[in-house]
Length: 550
Ligand SMILES: *[C@@H]1O[C@H](CO)[C@@H](O)[C@H](O)[C@H]1NC(C)=O
Ligand SMILES: *[C@@H]1O[C@H](CO)[C@@H](O)[C@H](O)[C@H]1NC(C)=O
Image 1 (cartoon, rainbow, N blue to C red):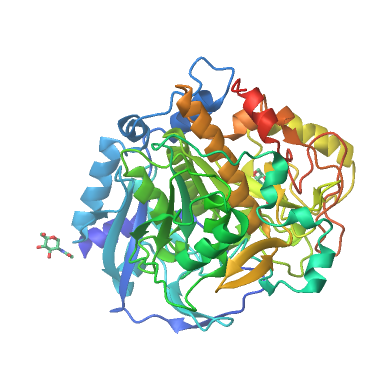
Image 2 (cartoon, rainbow, N blue to C red):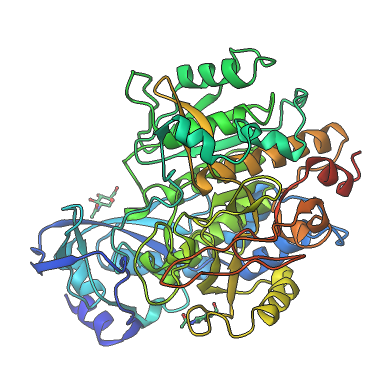
């Protein structure tokens, strides 16, 4: 007890932020949680040199650098990320003073799990945990509105989770539509050759990839299962040249699975495997099913999957994810730690792509708003955000495509000149509705409208940035196949390349906008960046030649 009092006497204010929850979620606080309620918390320890890792990532990802393509080994990443001995000592001393045992939750021990009780946590962090109910889902959660940490842990303990980040709907990029393919749908599609896989319009070859070491990973969350029979029907319909036994392998974590029963297919998972396996001809593709036994609080496995891949001796060279959420749902400290996990995986040589979201400037899904709602993780500068387009001749921005500027992450160096010229052209449009000093997203785009899939045995058409991320990821996987065959490194973290020598190999998207929040969103501009579709959509032959491969 004395020790606790001592610790509390020197408490410093650590977080006094307001709770983070979705703007429209109704949250009910119904009183304090009982002291003996078990509480599982995760401690994020300060990494030894995360800035060093970020700089190194940019160095190995920038084409003009002599270190370009020299991806880091597990041990090299570990040297930047493993907490310093004094940090480990300080945290361990504090844990043992309080009779707690920490369990490592990450490859480099920068995340530690503790099993405590509400009563003890209230004392440890000078706070009061309460029970909240999320009106929309009836989900209950024990959270607090702010907390403090002992001053002796300052500089050692980055954050405690879950505390001020509330559960929220995380479904950025779920297809907006999964409609039976009616005649009406066909005629609203401007050209019949938009039919699956639409991406062939980008000059994507159908020739088989040759490199078995080149893996394309597709993530699956929230009980979305990829159905092998739907994939086979899709290939039989659209890729008669591919063996119809072409399929994916499965990895699972957090109790994930991939049941194949009729009716268990998930529209997102079906879309994601069809537009990777059906586009990246012959690239070994793995579906990673993340179950509900999250080890990362209410991040729904978003951190777990990255830690899972970081433990692999050879992580996939591309990872595509069509899930996400509004940036305002997640505390800035937590957003930073997730983003730093992407930086670690990027440094290992994985290209990380996410769908940007489907609500235009109003966020992950269309909603009412008075200022623009950026999405997560698109604001993170160490991943590649993919927006959506529609139509051909001309290919234009899809109005659902989420795009804009982060409120958490600043403008990364690789993007600075592109963003400042865009902002100059934008003038006073949307003044006060977005954060002009934030990282702009998406970075690139691909088709996301009336994209044909096979779902539960039926032909369907779907809309969303969910379609765009796997298509773009497939292009990168095919480029990696050629690079590896030529004895070169796979692309790894894409953005410094995309914003320099890669930019001219993308198709400019010169019209469209992404309305929302009672505005017409960000407008198109000719000849460059558009914060609905970023640098543009892929042009495979041009990308090959930009990489010196043609
Ligand atoms: C911590 O670990 C030790 C040794 O494994 C065990 O005896 C003790 O009960 C544990 N304490 C808690 C709070 O789990
Ligand atoms: C705007 O973005 C910057 C850079 O990320 C950030 O520091 C600042 O807090 C943001 N402002 C608001 C009002 O969100």
